[in-house]
Image 1: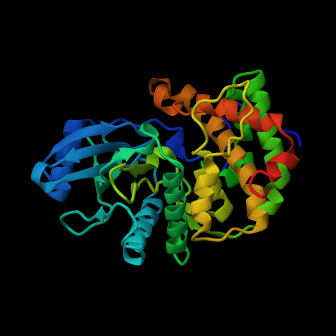
Image 2: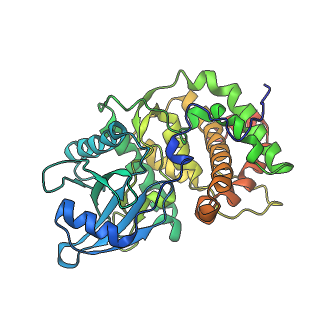
Image 3: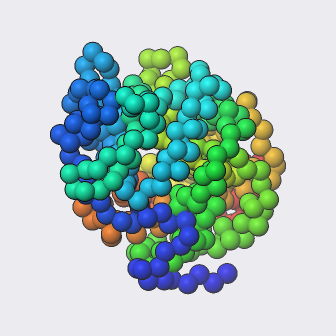
Length: 358
């Protein structure tokens, strides 16, 4: 396979405008006014760090806490409607799953549109707040990782019969579209890091025909540790699954691989060639208690986890150059990923195939 490096203006089909276009941020005071006008909620707004939209924790004292999301102006209303419809479907299909609830405005509208003080038309959502600690700020044990896998499997089953006109959208973070991002290789630092990324793309290209034949349905597609809210004092442990912004119709194996990749160790000794799937196998064990995977899916999942690492490297290095003021947040997980890509590069394709089947 030959991978050609492109230029800054090139953009693959899965590259959403909200990942590359700047917008005028909405301040906390304006967010509070928007929330009161649309939802009748009076509270103090605190900004969350996010990839593309303006998101606030809205503390309304006795009324409780909510999450106010003001979408990037380039986000399509039909795609936001897909997310709302999916969350409503889950609320009806599996009310016991720890999923936030979406709230309508005072006029009964799901996706009200406001014109901000900067003159931008922005879609607004108010979502229930899931109490707990994001998993990326704490730890988890093997049984707790198994619980994560169980919830992922139950989510899959609950989404199996869901469809929406926008569910086939192209999401840049869906590893199925990794090869569309190869024009971003020029943003990866020259040397070993670029070589590891190229190796990941080449190996992914070899298994892409098999991936295209795998089972597909609507899935969460972003079971990363910042989207999992936990409580060590709760017997359920996983108390919230948030952010359906990357939900899409994709391969079941892609959804599982994303969850597994995000359980790889955050720090890695370059001299210690430990198996990166030691902790992820706990998630898989819990998942397989409630959902099946074919032998072919199990063979492909390690390649897809490697591919997701490459997606992260490509998108974050690209976006950090476009938005240097937000580079700390954008690159927060990228450094750990280099050691993971090096590890994949150091083993053979046959060894990768056997990681979950042996």
